Image 1 (spheres, helix red, strand yellow):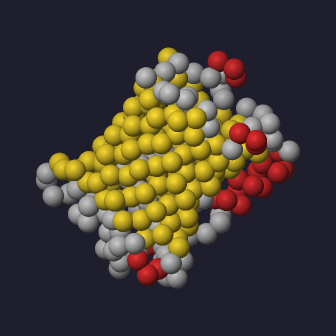
Image 2 (image 1 turned 120 degrees about the vertical axis):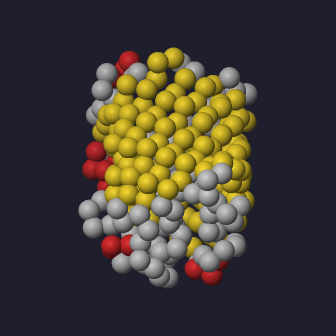
Length: 255
């Protein structure tokens, strides 16, 4: 079982290339969903310091983003959500950046399996001032499993652009993954984790290694109250890739 979990997760991490890293919503999806008839309200805050790469015009030098997320549980395994994105986009003014709609689900038949599966479908309609490719649709398979006290999850997103410079680039693939350690066992109020986010370019025009964005994000999850969740992390670019750092935090409350 351990071999199967580790193999599946790392194959997903390595499975392809991605679009530019999404600094409006830096989070790892699991198969868990908001309970039926409940509403989760979340705030995603990302403070980005990224270097501009040679030949790259789609990377911000500095941006500050706040994204408000509202998610409602339709069924025990299905939720729908709406994102409202805002940010200081390097122009000196704080403004509305666009919206996104998601449908997120787990596959209940896999709950008793060594590996669980789910998915997330997201429709993006952002402002051109905020992102280079404002209109797209993304499908993100979710693969997760446990190895002792370790929880592993991979989110290899498949994305299609419908406007902007990436329109004719075909499909892109966005690897993201996380490893979480249940430090206190069943009490589960503090969980250190290590997340990964990458951007190596479109499938038809992969960037050179020194123009890629590869981030490792050490952080932690905090659950001090049943309805409250908190995640914090600091992202660092891998050596040889575009230098850059960011701070991210997510706080959510279940109604």
